[in-house]
Length: 316
Image 1: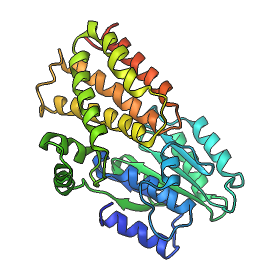
Image 2: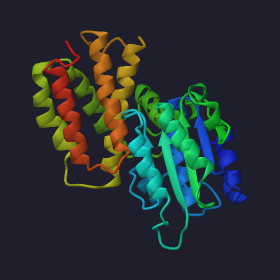
Image 3: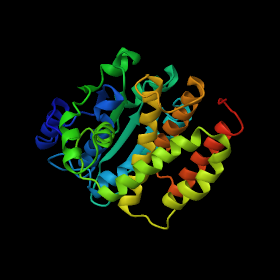
Image 4: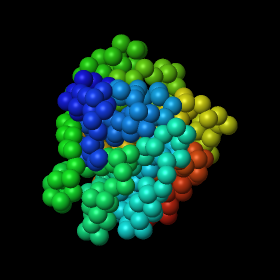
């Protein structure tokens, strides 16, 4: 993680044990705010005096929404609903489950996709937060989308787009091609040491994906003989989970580049087709934030692709 303003502010809060009740992370999706939010949540739960690293066990469990006293909602999957918030607030009112800790943390991504009723629920809860051991982290790409009443009750942590040039150089130094290094620096703006062989395999798989997704009759073949054999191994290693994460983000970026006119080599029949594919992969990425079994996630992704490409729901 880089020594940016947000990083220093959060690290100082932890070191001095002066935590706000609710934080509001604002800035573009490319700013790295979601990764820092998970790290901050894990640090609070562990009562750490500094931000944990991305290989920390609690950080990884929070990413999968698989830690007793951590609660995650994402407005990107669907607009946040009042029942979801009611269920969340009910859980937060209970005693912490993790042994030796009283702390609970909730993280709501894309809070801007909430209705007025949901905002009022959250506002009421913030004002009546039970004790000092419940902490909130709200994330929004645009602070102007939020009601002033919510903003005023949060400690704002602004994020800006990360300069990828340094991480790009580091990925190149690791042996990746310039194009691969550019993609990796967009997926992980804050440099991470990655398994070289695994990443090269994923890049090949992504390139093959682009080819097959443009040929509707070949898609079942691709899913059966390329996609599933790689990702459906009976292996729960960190490496394979990372491969799945990179694959999803890589396809998302390729779609985005096509729509922005940066890469016109994707060969989609229409802009509508590319938008549908982008929506499908973004949905899969959002679902991957939850503690969903990889096979179930991949089955869902394959179904969405087959429905979209072959049955023509939004494509062709």
